[in-house]
Length: 374
Length: 104
Image (tube, rainbow over all chains, first blue to last red; front, side, top):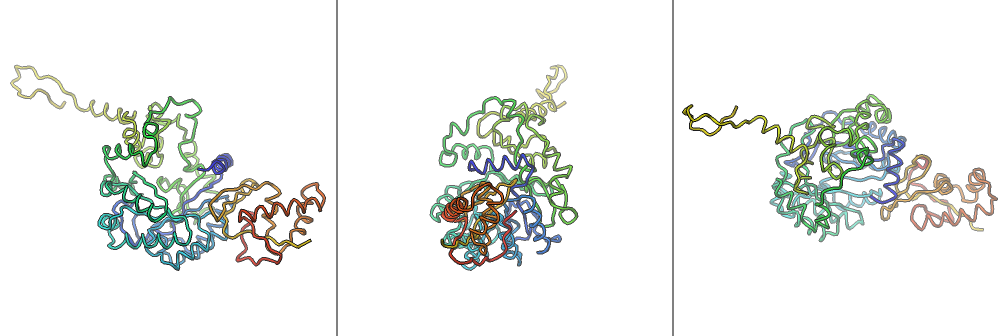
């Protein structure tokens, strides 16, 4: 984050302004990515007029960065109407798309409307791997062609690569592809549970061994020793910090108007069809509950040696059952990075050992086993 | 003296944060914040009102400054903002593609 943006974010935090909002305009999608956390049905998306009214409210509330995402945003026939309206309101607009529907004409329109950046999901440089994740044959070629169109228009394109067991071997290939295309590339090793709480997708993520390998790749993390170092003991100030921007300067709105603290934090806080956006942002008891969380108040994590450097996501923790509790996926990351188990991992181990007690069986009992589960 | 018309560049992103204008350049995503004078100029940049009129009707009302002094400073500022592609300037009125939310 640039110094000035950091300063503006601090100001927004002080003034309780939602500087950054992700708005999913549809959950419908032309791809069926194996790790996707959404269902792809239309349960009653907001109409064009409802979205425009919401954008007006967001502009009045001080929202500056607006990420339009989905689902696949180009499946909405009114996508350009929404985008044009958002730009009239002078939002800094970022798009997330698989870009399959973007050809020269769409790329030129996006450029003319002054979009800040377009994030395109690419899982591998090899069609057989990428297409096996999207479950759409030919999708890699279409997405890469679109990136070329967008880049040729002078637009900022960011390839987003979600790391899973299925594409673990290919992240360097994706980075090389990004380099060849002249675009940026990000790598995310977190596979999110589905919004309905189904955790089956999490199993698609990389294991600890692979994560350790990624965290020790200097081409990704820079100085490996520094990246993998154990954080110094937390100061009282650090423990008084807020965990992340969710609910503080950022939130998420679904295609149905539901407002959540973050796309990865499915705690319902209100619906813009029934209430004003700013009213939900300022007065929702759930939003205020999220806002009250400080690192010093966390169960388990406050005493963890990783608390100062952990990427603990309160949304993932919420999906595990307690927004003030640990997020196991982040515990795994801290462990892979430093080799030191988190307080949560140690507590789980302790709990498991309390369940299984090994005791000696007296020799005269005639038992042949050396131990038994009590 | 040449009349200067000035308009907001439709490629930028902008939002007022507690009276301070945040502007993101459409060229390279550089973020700027405008001081109070520049914010007033930004809010008045409709492409139709000439700069000297904005100075007398807005800047001189808000600040204790003579019109001549204020116009000179405003011209410098407007040209600087145009160099950063935040504003567009012209000797003729600048048609605006849409009524942008300049005060938000």
